[in-house]
Image (cartoon, rainbow, N blue to C red; front, side):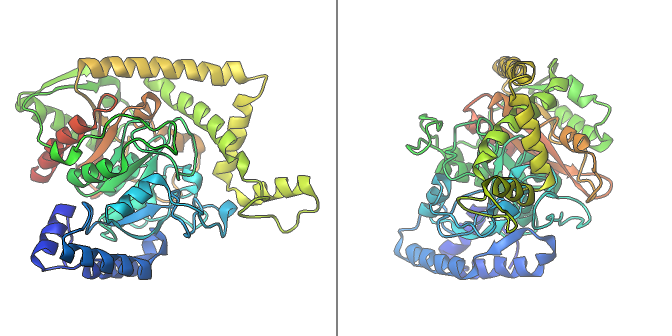
Length: 476
């Protein structure tokens, strides 16, 4: 069976009887087994997926199938699915099974998507390489000695290596977009609040957003229109009506596009990524679009602002994991205090502990105003300037990452790992939608990703423009 590029291709085969969902599931299960060395899946739900496939085949025969019939999905290990393990790739949640299904996951099931397994990620979604996972790193299918990016690394590899048609990840500061760039797939972060966070294990609650990793823009649109919308179980979910994104993918004839000059000329930017961005900008100019450099004075402030705020929120959110109610409990605890201390020290990995400590520090009485309050003020400046630019321009175009995928264990210094997020955190701080699309390869054959941002709730425009960019990438 050949690799499918989109759900439309799958459904056209299903419609004429050349394919069944059961055959499709068996195909992906075989790919997962053959590529187990990539460590993309932590758990495969083979029997359940086959049963779901049989049920969807029956609905297709009866003409009652949902809009995602034929879509075989993997779930990042931070999404709740009742009766299934949910560990956030951490020892701290060893043995825990979810008691409920998150809203986004339930909507996918209701639309007849088929769930095939639980995917590896950085521990509690904290990391940019998938190396903090308790279960070991996922590996880039293009070069297994390189990282797939993070934190949704396993989700990106699964799509890259054809283990499922699409994956559902989460993006706090680039955790869908960065691995998408490293693995040569599409990664989409919606506007904050566009998709309900109910059932998503919290890292930083004012940043976290569920998003898809796909091989086509159309599939990202179809998944978003199913998952998005109001939710009584999440008070932060937007009440706005959900457009039919997949029906609005025709790009406009003319756009105004800005690019951040400091990002393009940044010394640490890999030359091949700069060349790919320059080529795209020149192509857009040749097509008659307005393409102009813009000034964004806060580029160097984004990483410290992001990490101050997200570590503070992580410190608060991860306080619930104490060894008492569920998950890992230290076997050598002697009293209540030692139970707390030992369970958290043994259950959390080094990177999660680092972020909890940093977050606790910036929230402490002596340093709250100096760090946390100041970071909130800078976040407002970043958001206001980003919103201003996105009123002047339809989109902002910039690299997704400063380099292509680096080698496993290459970045031992946490700061160098954090700096790899420099281009993705802007959309997260501003709460606006952003997408990473493939833009060729470097000299080593490693994928390059370019990122596009749009104004809040302008997902339809962003997806339509992305079809233009991906068409260019394919024909280049």
